[in-house]
Image 1 (cartoon, rainbow, N blue to C red):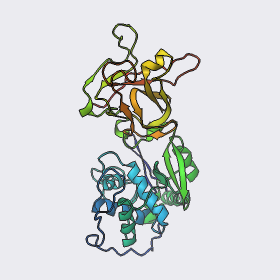
Image 2: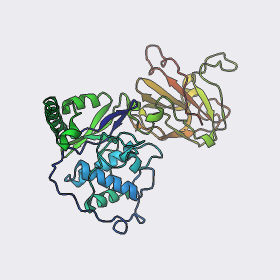
Image 3: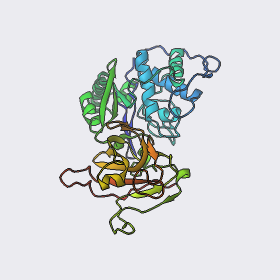
Image 4: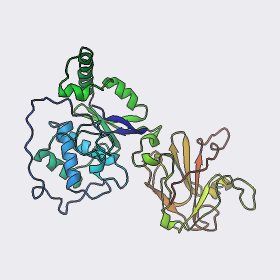
Amino acid sequence: MAALAAVGGVLTLGGFAAAVISSNRAEPEKTPLAGALTLGNAPRASSGDASDSDDIEAAARMLASENAKGSRALWIEQVWSQIHAKSPGQSLFQRITAGSGYGPQGERSGQGKVRPVSTQEPAQSVHWQLALEVLSGLHRSRYPGAIAFFEPAEQDRALEIAGRARKKLQMGQPLTAQEQRLQHYRKSAEEVRREWKKSMQLAGVIDGVEFYEMNRSNPERNDFAARAEAKLLAWPIAQDEVSRIGDSVMQARPGTGQPHYGVDIFAPPGTIIRAARSGRVRRVVDGRGSDRESMRRAGLWVDVAVGDQIDRYLHLGEALVAEGARVRRGDPLGAVAAASTSGTGQSPHLHFEVRAGDYSRDTKEYGPPIQPKFKVI
């Protein structure tokens, strides 16, 4: 079923509840992890953090609880979806359990948050082994952008059980443990689909399980790497590389009196420029050899569409992305150019803009400039 829980206004998306499980299923035998499975020197999955036994255990319990009889392809993608969904610095264990320990999806314990996926079932060795292999880099993700998964058949079954549970409550009849867990479900699979598609899009289907990724038209809404600070922009140049900050938005440029429209961030040539927000590369333009002065002044630049807005990166020495590429916050876009080689700046710097709309061929302008609100560094 769909893991779709609002916690303090933050949308949590993950897998589906494991409550729709036969009550007479035999409990799997658990064998000790230590000594049986080790990471050794195997290459790790590109999840950003070293995997340890807690990460493996959490992933394994998710597989045992969500789709204990699923295919290896399904299990691999389920683990990867949680790797994709975790925030910077967050371990896979923290992502899967939400600080609430192991238990049913959609619940919380103590000071924790709502669990995005179920981990209530003990894992078998086959689950541990598969989790270890994924975290060791032995299996690639089929859908690199997938951050949530959803099983329509289980959602509809849960809704049916929830309806029966509510009728029993009205008649004063006792509920089974399964009915107690599922009585809050009120949406059909199609209703969940419609809700998810407001901000996500279908990436693919494995064994009837649908995997979803961020919607191209509104990528920032579900950028899990930055959801806690969605209204802030990451600095496009690392803190220790910034030498100084120059003219700000709408400040009159010295000698011209014209508005600046962006922020100048000075850094050594060759410094990597990273995406301040998630989006899609709208254009990569090299105006360094143009016969138009405006393009020569911009040099080499990259425009990234973020919803209806455009983030602009000017005065690059090289571009590391292509038009149409989807980028996430923090992905490298290019590098700072040497002085006077990409624009007219006498010192190497990035000119960064946020514009309210894309370039219009009618007005020959982008939308009005917006003062960027950067994360404090």
